[in-house]
Image 1: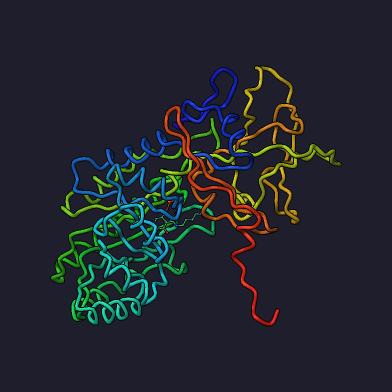
Image 2: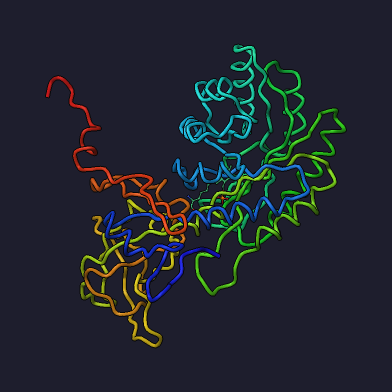
Amino acid sequence: MDHFLYNGGKLHAEDVPLSRIAEAVGTPFYCYSTATLTRHFKLFDEALQGMDHLVCYAMKANSNQAVLRTLGALGAGMDVVSGGEYARARAAGIPGDRIVFSGVGKTREEMRMALEGGIRQFNVESEPELERLSAVAASLGLSAPVAIRINPDVDARTHEKIATGRKEDKFGIPISRAHAVYARAASLPGVEAIGIDVHIGSQLTALEPFEQAYGKVADLTRQLRQDGHDIRRLDLGGGLGIPYTRGNQAPPLPSDYGALIRRTLGDLECEIEIEPGRLIAGNAGLLVSEVVYVKQGEGSDFLIIDAAMNDLIRPAMYGAHHDIVPLVEPEPGAPTKPYDIVGPVCESGDTFAKGRELPLLAEGDLLALRSAGAYGAVMASEYNSRPLIPEVLVNGDQFAVIRKRPSYEEMIERDTIPHWL
Ligand code: LLP
């Protein structure tokens, strides 16, 4: 459930008509709902009630400071994957002991930054990374809490580009190497292996792959304990999918996911961490855009809108579906027609939808691309020299710009001219 509903014929974000925000900030823009972010975070937190746990929001999904502060105030931890994300989390007031550091390519600099600034744990993804972390931490006279990310060789049955738990994927350490790697960690200075980490992919729409992976984690926990390792924390990753299409069968709920965790891992008495991103932010945001032209095509007509692939790349990159709705509620039974909805960027891939049935639309009409709160603004670029679009956060009947639209000058000023030009 989200808080983007028609009220009096107008699509609202909570209590604010989106058309009012469009007047104030211009289009295109991203809009997020505080109530929806809050609700989604709490669903996870409540799903793990009774277990020692921390929900570490995967901030790669949406790392705006206002979003991080909203979640941080609810007690969220953060899953970070770069020095930049670590810095953003800290700037948003998240204490180091609520930050886990994931990612396959952590540099010395990033390790140092997190060790000095404070960190809950490093999710170590390879043997060379373990060696390097040991060296960096030891040189600082510190000890790094570590969870080794294992690759359970489980097919998450999701889009090829976002499956991460099969043996051919670049992530984690093969489970067959786990004994050797934990033994190595125990012999190294500067690292303490306290847990196991797993993340098998994103936009999972069934629980079975989680169940398979978590079953392997449970077995491994017992074996490693027998080897003498004090495994006391399990990081179970993120990945629970969201409904991108209203009316279709919805993916399992956080409560079902929580019950699965309890069933597969509850008896191990470990502290549980999860790293949801998309489910918290995805349906808490949408992208509002204006129709620039309606152009007659050979097949469907084209709706050329002022948002483009540089603003929301998911359709171009993954063939992702986003529901698209007009800001003015269509009358029941109003005629519709199929449109190809495209942006102004000079590539045919700049297509949001093909043959999408919508009520008849005209220049100047406003549309919302739904489910755009996760992996939307964070994946945007300035391709075609289109400045990054603003982000707006709604809270009840208030709204605030949480990232402003840069002017052309601000965009250009970031380039610097060498002395010979
Ligand atoms: N933890 C780790 C280690 C991850 O790599 C990810 C996502 C998550 C947690 C959060 O997964 P979520 O709960 O959001 O599914 N850009 C793609 C999604 C990439 C996901 C990458 N890793 C998209 O737009 O679909």
